[in-house]
Amino acid sequence: MPQLDLLTFFPQFFWSFIFFISFFFYFSYCIIPSIATPLKLRKQKLIKLADEINKKKDDSSHLLVEYDNLASNSFDETKKKLDKFMLNGTVWSNSKISTLNRGNLSKITLRFLKNCFEKESNEFIKSPISKASKTPKKMPKKGQKRK
Image (cartoon, rainbow, N blue to C red; front, side):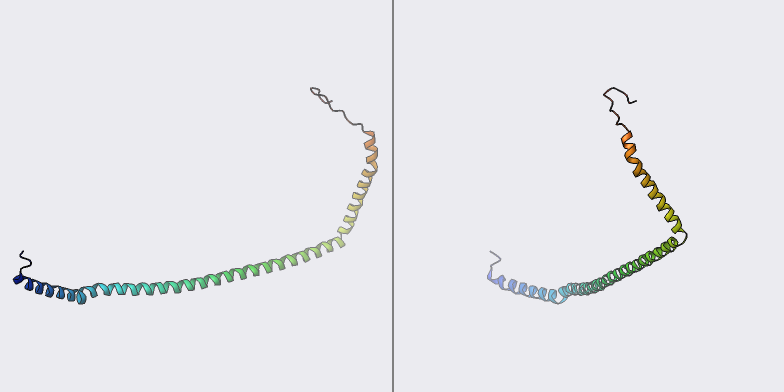
């Protein structure tokens, strides 16, 4: 076989060794660094962007906490003011009602209550008499009309 010929074997081995060693060093010092440099820069950029995103998330979570606190404080303040308004409104309305009742409306209220009492007492007195005088109505049979 011509590949294993001792006269040509050593020179083929030598030149193949030289070619592969030079090819290895060329790739190691020229091609691989030119590919690795952008990859390293991209990785560093991604790390920086991730750090910035995490900082912004922390800031946004801090803003959310502040917003929640502000909203709860405003709701508490509104509730206090509404409670105060309701209390003052109740006190005011009670004072106005009592002032009106002590004034002109007291006579009218007394007359109204007197008339109500008289009406109820008259109905109470008349009710046993009117119930006794009334006779119960008979229910019509099927097919008959009421009179």
